[in-house]
Length: 322
Image (tube, rainbow, N blue to C red; front, top):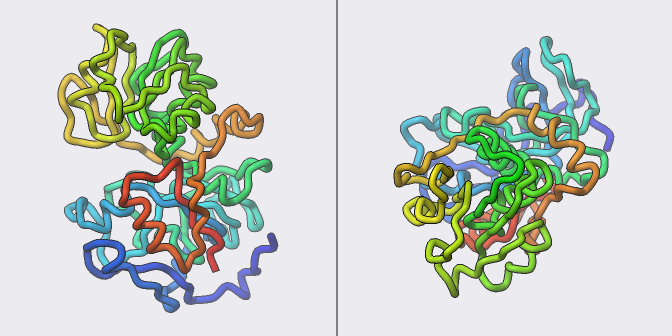
């Protein structure tokens, strides 16, 4: 994909914008007159090819993080895959024409970018990006950063290691699908169990789950088996703590937190994507994209509606972006 030269870069671009908090269908508007962001010395300007949605996008839209959010109007979007079209003066690892991907907000709820990834162009710090693995499409790459980094960093930070057993709550979601794969293929789990609804049990097994639990038919905390580690992606830490072995750990990414479970907040870091590149290139770890997608840019509100239903499988990707 040829990148436009600096001389031909537009000053305005198309983006989805909200100027007030509320439901996506009510507040998200397509705007063709959004200023292309200036590139700071540690940033690159990306021509966005694909972007992915995460639950944090709709929670931010609803005003859950007002106290630490960036000022409105805002362009949402954390996950990006695209082409570098301009490079800041201090950038060392990327050049114009590079195909990159990443989660563009280093701290998810601490003043995230005003111009996110649901735009034709976004300016992003070098340290949160990585070169796109050659075997992945832009759609596949866009689906990964926030989810795979949350999965990896949550496991690493709380000491998950080879030979331990793990239970993943919400195994068919964006983060859950990656936790299953990383626990099994990267960290060397002795046993991976995961929960989902009936229709998604086979997906869990295909990703590496040894035990797929149908949450519509049984309560995981009532099983006689307990686990060294429980990774809760759905907000059930009150139940998660009952499934942990003595001396084990329960981690959640959705509050509120029931002690002794811990909550984990991601710090976006391109070096994690680099570290996982061999597993992505070998196909041991795969992107999981909701079969309803990808959604064209014009159907972004439909994608948000599907996200808000909490019924998505894997990730929702927006592509092409104009």
